[in-house]
Amino acid sequence: MSEFKLDSISDFLKKRIDSYTGGPTHYRLGTVTKTGDGVVRISGLDKVKYGELLEFDGGIYGMALDVDEGGIGAVIMDNADTVCVGDSVKGTGRVTEVPVGDELLGRVIDPVGRPLDNRPLNCKKHLPTERKAPPIIDRRPVDTPLETGILSVDSMIPIGRGQRELIIGDRQTGKTSIALDTVINQKDTGVICVYCAIGQKASNVAQLIETLNSKGAMSYSVVVTATASDSPAMQYLAPYSACSVAESFMEKGKDVLVIYDDLSKHAVAYRTMSLLLHRPPGREAYPGDVFYLHSRLLERSACLSEELGGGSITALPIIETMGGNISAYIPTNVISITDGQIYLESELFHSGMRPAVNTGLSVSRVGRTAQYDAMKKVSGALRIELSKYREMAVFTRFGSDVDSATAKMLRRGECLMQLFKQQKFSPYSLFEKVALLLAYKDDMFDDIEITEIKPFCEEMLTFLHLNCKTAESEIMSTKSLNERTEKQITDSINSFKESLANE
Amino acid sequence: MTKVIITVTSSVNDEQFKSICDGLKRKFGNDLSFEKCVDDGIIGGFIADISGDIYDASIISQLKKMSKHISIG
Image 1 (tube, rainbow over the protein chains, first blue to last red):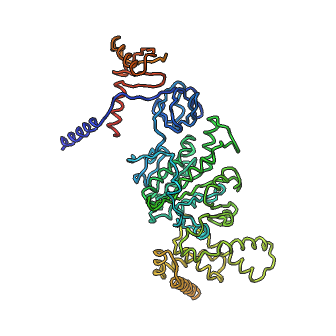
Image 2 (spheres, rainbow over the protein chains, first blue to last red):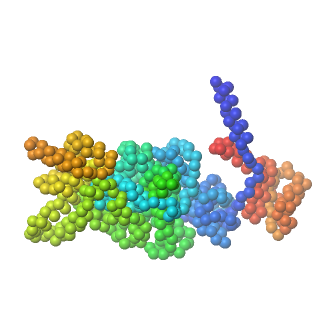
Image 3 (cartoon, one colour):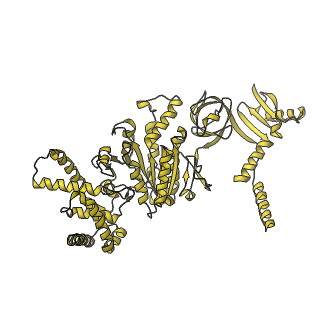
């Protein structure tokens, strides 16, 4: 047995040696002339491409970002302390690459594709991190919804597959939670999720991976992470790597969801790099190409035509604002690039409205085309009703008397706000969302105390799951709502209310 | 005049060194000046450094390349 093993090993080695095609090699060598803060100047490498991967003594890698006659400016990706003046630098002729493929599912990698979960990675294919966005001719309009499982988002700010929807808000307003909820809701839908953490605390990322694991969401997810302790070059690369990973799945015809958490830290990392490379600072000290930085990334989200497999990349970039200021430089840039935004407000968050979505400032530019028929039918006038309610709520704050029509409107608005409250990591299915909004539409909550609405809803949904199975399976399979199923659901809700009254 | 630094092992004699120089002259023209650098660490062969352009025909780098090829393919 051992002989056989030895034979097979030596055969294998012989085969590998046979396939080796060696010989003299030719490469260019430069010398480090200046080093500091993770940025080096190199002389002598005059044929280097922009963005080329450079190899320093000791196997450290860097990226050429400033190419001029006098020399090259490069950023170091790993430990910058070990690079000294006089070290030699080799141009590799390659641009930065990341491993891609199904082997990545369930894995945690860094932006250059090194596994961070202590298991070897056996990816056969690599893709460059910087790739061109799909051209116009290869795209088709966004028409399929990507359900987040969050009632307020799916009913009023629907997200379509291939869309770019920004999640924006102050710190601690539940931005990452919305993204995570969306990932968890993609279970059994065939959508692959790529979560990209940029400049975040390692402890937060560890917790997030733990959450994904416990919800069984890691089996269809990939996490690309560059934490706050990684070099700015790594943080800069992270979203592009994540996008390349996503593109490899999209090109196989799959639907992919990418979350960039968050792009304001990405812009800060790029600003650090640019200032150290002596590029002229512009507004808020960001370099001139900070718009292009994000536009070229988000343009890579697409909905490919049927001829190319019909895959898609939906992007959920996250931006953290300071003191609710959405008119700062980076937020306005990203708002103008994306197809809409979900605006989270700390005031709402602290008043107990979670998720703290400000439905007035949130929009989805894809709109109703990315909504299932059943959802369209029940969510028609929600936005208008809610904006009227907010307007009236301001006027009546001081306890003035109101007529019955206004009182009804206020009551309905309060009711809706209660419905939109939702626990973290407990997404609603399409049937549940339709049932809740149907009950709201038919004024079924009118005789229930405002504070009792939420517990009532939970009980009602449990009741409906047991007693309305045919309607549920019909809605979940056809994604539409006909009169018969609508009547079935309203009848069930009525009988549930009767059973409550009889208790 | 372009300066060329040629790294060889100590076992290379003057005649062998001259043939390396002649070979490089045939390839890159006669406008070259040569400097010899001895390093037994390269095991055999030579490395020519033509102002940053490296032509590496040393045994050590071929061995390194081969070990990389066998281990990862």
